[in-house]
Image 1: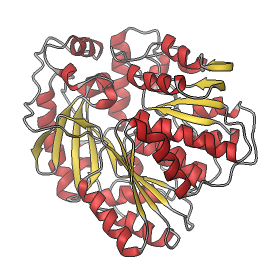
Image 2: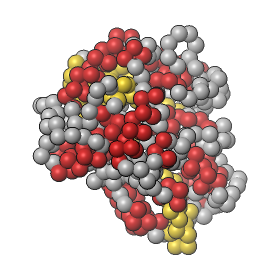
Image 3: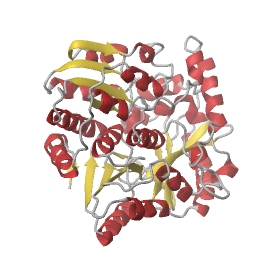
Amino acid sequence: MHAVRKGLTADGAGLAGDRVVAAGSAARILVAATARALRGEDCADLGHVGPLSRFVGAPEPVRRAAATRAAGRVALTAGQTAEVDADRVARWFTDQYPRRRWPGLLLGSPHGAAAHLAVALGVPWLPAGFEMTAHWAGGSVDRPRAALDHGAALTARLLAANPDLHVRQVHCPASRGALAGATVSLAARWLTLPAAYRRFLADRLEPGAPVLLLSDARTWPVLDSAPGHSFQVGCPASGLDPVDFHPDSHNLRQVLRAAGGDDTPWEPPEVGAPPGYAEHGVESGFDHHVREWTGRHGHPLHRIHVPWPEALSAAIADLYRRWLRAAGKTGDRLVVECGRLLDPWQVVRAGMVPYWCENATRRSVEGVEWWLAGSEPFSSVDVLPEPPGMRSPALAGLPQWLAVAGFGHRRRALDRASARGYPVSSVPTRRATEVLRAQPYDLPTPKPLAVPEALAGLREGGAAQGLLVC
C-alpha cells in the first residue's frame, strides 16, 4: 500500500480515499495530474515501476502470477468494502486542489483530454465516480457468473453504508487480463452530488462561475443484478465489441488464453434489456442534482456529451492549437499521450498540442491517425504508447504507433522506454513527465482560456464527430 500524503486522508475512522480508489484508475490519475498542473507542478512523483517491468522476458504464467500478486496487495478485502465511505472519497478528491476561489469547474466522466481542458481553463476537474478493486479468492477469468455472484455480495456490503452510489461491476479479461480472475472491478457512480462536492461548489467557486459536466455516452449490454448493482461483461475500453464476448467468439478464446483461462465453458449471464451507459457514464440523478444546484446558486451549467473518446480528444487538440496560436506560439508540436502517460503541466510549459488516446487498442490509435490525416501538418510528433501489460487481439502493434509518429514533418519520435517490452511491460505515469521535460520551453504560458471561447471551439471542432455541447 502506498503512503498516504498528509492532508489527503479523510478525518475520522474508516478507509482513506487513497486506500479505496484503485491504483492506476482513470479518476485517480486525472485528479492528481490536474491538481498538480494547477499548482504549477508536473507528474514526476506519479506512478511506480510495476512488477511486470522485471518480467518482460519471462514466460506468460510467470508474468500473470506477478501481476495478480501485485493486484492482491492493493485490492480491498470483503471486510474493507463495508468500511468504504464514498463522501470521504469525494473529500479526498477535492482536498487535492489548492484552497482558493476558482473561475469554474469541470466534472463528470474520466477522460485525459478533459484534464487538458481543465488546465487550459485554469479550473479543477472532479469525477462523477471512482473505481475500486476487491479480492476474489478462487476466482477465474472464464467464470463471469461466479464473478457476478461474488461482486453482488461485495456490493451489498458497500451499498449498506453508501446508498447514494450505483455500482457497476465490470468483468473484462480483455482489458484486465489475469487480474479479472483474481479481483473484481467495481465502478462506483454517485447518484447525487456528494456533500464534499457541494461544499467545494459553495466555498471555492467564484460567484457566477460556470460548471461544465462531461458525460461518456458509450453504451454496452448491462444486466441489472439488484437495486444499486449492475453487471457488464467486457467494456468499450477493451477495443472489442459486445459480440466478441459471445462464447463462440474467436477473439474471446484468444483473450482467455492470454489471461490464463482454462477450458471452462464461457457462460455469461443473460442480458435482456437494451444496452445502457457503460461503466464511465454519468448517473441521471447526478446530472439532475448538478443542474438543480447550479440553477439555484446562479452558476451557468454546460453539458458535453462524448460519443467516443476520440471525438473529445480531437476537439480539444484543435482547441489547444488555436489557443496556443492566439498567444503567439506555433501550435505545430504534437504529443500523443496514452492512458496514464500524460502530464498537463509539461504540455502547457512546452507549448505543445495534446491528443490523448484512451489506451493502446487499434481503435484508439486509428482515431488519432484519422484526425492527423485531416489536420494541418505538425512539424513534430512525439508518441507515448502505454503498454497495457498483457496481450490482446485488439491491441495496436508498434508499427501502427510508428505510423502515428510518421505524421511529423521534421521530428518523429516514439518513446523507446514505452516501446521496450511492449505490450507486456509497464511504464509509470512519470515517464510522460521525463519525455516532456526534454522538450524545449515555450514560455510564458498562455493566459487561461475563457469558457465561452472553449465551448465555441468544442462545438465547431466536435460537431462533425458527434460531440454535443449544450
